[in-house]
Image 1 (cartoon, rainbow, N blue to C red):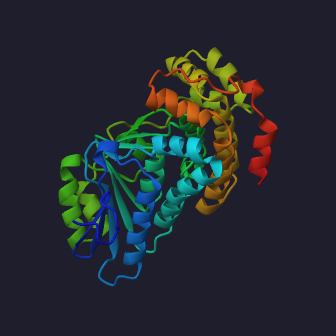
Image 2 (cartoon, rainbow, N blue to C red):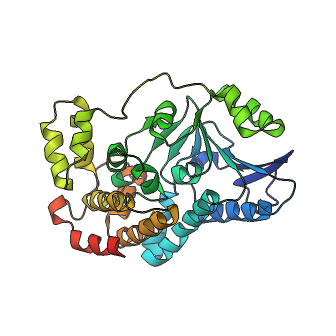
Length: 342
């Protein structure tokens, strides 16, 4: 492997037969995605787009700990403090552009979502055509806990289907396993991690469908619904505040757990993600949802919560962010509705 094509050591590439392999190689930061990595990925994709010998892309990590833990939040916070929201948005938008390039790539893309897959990592690996999870996979969308907003195309992924489970995941940031990701529709195949190397080799010699059929196992959990009906009813509330009321009245232990998580989240982020999810349900394309999310990201970058959330969760690690405003009823929902309206 090497960095010749990507121009960056954090993004390694290799050609194996007709496969172009992109390997995220920033293990100490759990492959946290920044503007440089995003640009490097785009350079590789452009270089292989019309390459006649490469007909399949495999996107993976050099580490079993994480495929990608999301955006580089420390770097985002530092950019906000140093340069303000406009330049910070421009840096973040590099990642969104790379994700859209992967989603619309003319050649098949297979992502090995082994290990931690969070936030921007979901956007990077879950919008492609063939998404592989393992027993080590952990997926989550933790944006509301750090003062951000559901982004990276997650509003598209979480709003498909006739269920409010996606809204719950967007608001609470609940972690789900690889098996649950397949059931929910965030992944296509569950493959034991010790078979990934063999699967990659098989992809050189046979079709994707044939290779996956030999290594995929069915999730052991057979469930008819992603979340219980009573919990689904809570998130089907017509207003965000009503979700809190319904969770308080719900006897399920999951409802009590969700309520505590939501009480600790950024009120602005909750409202932004709420509006974003409901608006995304009505949109028809990934591009439209990204455009919506970009507007919401630009808005929350002008608010104080992201700087404070990253400080509390990742820098000082005191886990006591001081959100401004601190209550749902204090959030400027009129401004958010204007953002949604575009």
